Amino acid sequence: METLLTKNVSDVHFVSYVCIVKNLTTENKLFDSIKDLFLKYGIKSLTMDDIARQLGISKKTLYISFANKRDLVKKVIEYQISSVQCDVENECIEGENAIDELMGIGRKVNEGLSDAHPSIMYDIQKYYPQAWKVLMEHKEEFVFNKMLMNLKRGIEEGLYRDNLNPEVLTKAYMVMTEAMMSNQLALPGKFNFQELHLELMRYHIRGIANGKGREYLKQKFKEDN
Image (cartoon, rainbow, N blue to C red):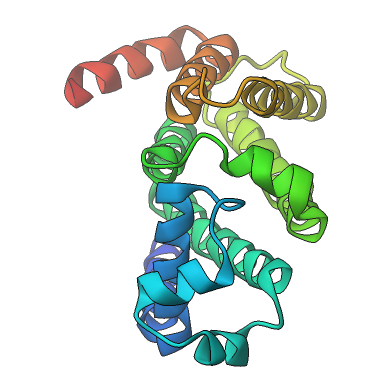
C-alpha cells in the first residue's frame, strides 16, 4: 500500500531522475554553456560570433540550434526556467515543513543569482520581449502557485499565522518581487539581486510566521550559521 511517506519518496526519486536526465543531454549542455556566458558578460553585449567563439564552435553550428539571437535568448531562458522549476519541485517534496521548503527554495534561487551579471534583467526586458514574456508567465503562474501553496501548508502545520489571507499575501509578495526587479532595472549595477532576494525572503517569512514558526526560524538560522 502506498502511504504519503512512500509516495513522497517516490516523487523525490522521480523528480531528481528527470532533472538528472535533462542535464545529461548534449543540447542542454549547450544551453548551460550559453547561460554561463550570459551570467558572466550580460546578454546584449554578446553577439552570435562572440558566443560561437567562446563555445569553440562555428557560427554555422550555432545557427543549427537557433534561428537568431532572439531565438537563442528565448530558448536559454525557457531552459533555465525548466531547471529552476525542477529545483523548486525537489525542495517542495523534500522540505520537512513549510519554512524548510521556503528557505530551501530561497537558497536555490540565490545560488542562481550569485554570479549573475547586473544587466541581465535589464537586457531581457528592453531587447528581448519574447524572452521577457516567458519570464513573466513563469512568475505569474508557477511562482505564484508555489508561494500560495506554501502559505496554505504553513497555516495547516501551525507555523504561519492562522489569520493570513493566502491569496492576498501571495499577490503582495509578487508585487514586492516586481519592485525588486524594477529597482534593478532602473539602476543596474547598484543593487545585487542575491542580496535583495535574501532580504525579501527573510522579511516575508518573519511576517507570516506565528510564535512557533519564529522560534523554528531562529533555530534554523543558528544551524545554518
